[in-house]
Image (cartoon, rainbow, N blue to C red; front, side, top):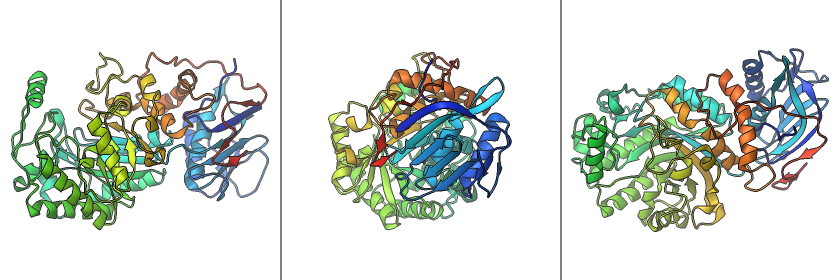
Amino acid sequence: MVLPLPLVPLPASAIVGEGRMPVTESMRVIGDSPAAIQLMDAVAHRTGIRLTTTDVAEPGAITLRVESGAAPTEGYRLSIGENLQIVGGDEAGLFYGVQTLVQLLTEESGVWSLPRVEIVDAPRFPRRGVMLDVTRHFFDVAEVKRFIDETSALKYNHLHLHLSDDQGWRIQIDSWPKLTELSSASAADGDRGGFYTKDEYREIVAYAAARHMIVIPEIDLPGHTHAIGVAYPDLVEEPVLNDALVSQAKELGQPLPVKGEPYLGWGVGHSSVRIHEERTYEFVRDVIRELVELTPGPYIHIGGDESLGTPQADFDLFAERATAIVVEEGKIPVAWHEMGSAAGIAEGTVGQYWGMTTPSETHAAEAARFVERGGALIVSAADAAYLDMKYTPDFPLGLTWAAVVDVQRAYSWDPVAVLDVPDSAILGIEAPLWSETTRTYADVEQLVFPRAAALAEVAWSPQEGEGRDWESFRGRIASLAPGWRARGVNFHASPEIDWASPEIDWASPEIDWASPEIDGVEQ
C-alpha cells in the first residue's frame, strides 16, 4: 500500500525515492546550531538511539546548516539519500526541518529508519498561534513548557498567554503588588490558583524562544476584570448582571459575582474597569510597561472582548487610550475584534477575530476596522479554531456555545475565506484553549490534541495541492500517535481517525505528491 509521507503539517513539496536509510548509533550530526542538540534529544526520546556530533564530514552523517536564500523565511530543504541534510533559510527553518525529520522516523522489526526523500517546505502564513488560558485554571511553568514542546513540534510559532480574567491574576506586577497578593489564589470552580513570578515568566519566554515561539502576554481589558477589583476595588465598577449570566449561574450551580470577592464562576460580561478615572490609565500604563520589560516579542494583547456591561462610548474611549499606551511603550497592540468598534484605535493595531466562519455584519465590520487603520488580522474562528469546544455533544470536556468541533471541522476551513478583507491582511490563525472545563493539564491535552494538528496544517500547508484534503490528513495524523504516546501526551483518540498504524510501502519510485515549488524556490 502506497501512502503519502506521515507528516503533519503537509509539506509544500516532497518527492519520495526508493529505499530507506537506517538510523543507528553510528550516525553523526554535523552542525553547531541549537537544532543539533534538539534533534539528538528528540531522536533519543523517540527511539532510544543517542546520536553524537562530529566536525568531520563522513558518509551517512546528518548535516544541519543555515543558508540565507536557500529557503523562504521559516522554510527549509530536507534531503535524505546517501547522506542526510537539512538546510534552513534561517534558524527557525532549520528547527522546523528537524521536526519533520523526527516525524519521518519509523520502526519495523526493531529497526529505525527514514525514507529516501526530497522536501522543500515553507509556511503559508507567518502567524501560527496557540493560546493557553492560564487564568480560569492555572497551569504551572512545567506544564506550559510541555504545551510549548508539543505545539512547536507542529510548527506553531506564537504562544498567546491569557494572564488575567475575572477568576484571577497570573503575573507579578511590582508597581501593583496586591494583584498577586490578593487576586492570584483563586480560579474557576474554587480550584488552585497561582501566578508567574517575573523570573518564571522570563523562563517561559526563553524556553519558547529556543523553540522559535514568540510569547504574547494578554491582560484582558476593560472587561474580564473582576479579579483586579479584588486587589484594588477603586479601579472597577460594580458587577453588571445580565439574564444570560444569571441563568447560567443557576444552571451550573455557580455563584454570581460580588465586588471585592473572588469570583469562581464562568459567567462573562459583568465586569469593567472605571473608564473615566485617570487612575485606571495609570494602572494600565504600569502593567503594560512592566510586561514590555519582560517580553522581547513585538506584541502586547490588551483583550477587549465581552464588555457587555460597558456603554459603547466608554468602551471605544478605552480602546483608543489603551492601544495608544501600548504603542507609546514600544509594542504593537493586539486586541479581540470588538475593539474595532473604536474609530481611533492606534494605527497598526492587530485584530483577533473570534466570531464564526460565517461572520455577523457587526463582527465583520469591527474586524475590517483594524485593516483600515493599517493593521492586520489573526483569524480564530470560534466554530473551527476554538480548542475548548466539545468534539461531540456528549464529550466530557469543553463547551458548545460556538459549535461542536470535531477534527474534520477543525481541518476543513480556509482562514482567508472568512472575512471580506484582502488576503494579505490575514497574518494567519490562532487556536485558543479557554480553560473553564480543563481542571488539569491532562484535560488540556485531551482538548488540544489532535485538533491542534489539524489547525497546524490549516496554518502551514498550501490550501490547494495533492494530499491537502481530509482523507489524506486522516491517514497522516494517525502516524503522530506513537510519538505522542511515547511522550505521554493525553490526546483524544477520536473515532474519526483510524489510529492503528497501516503498513506503509516506501519503495514506490518518485512519488511527487505536492507542489514542485514554493515562493519561487524550485527544487
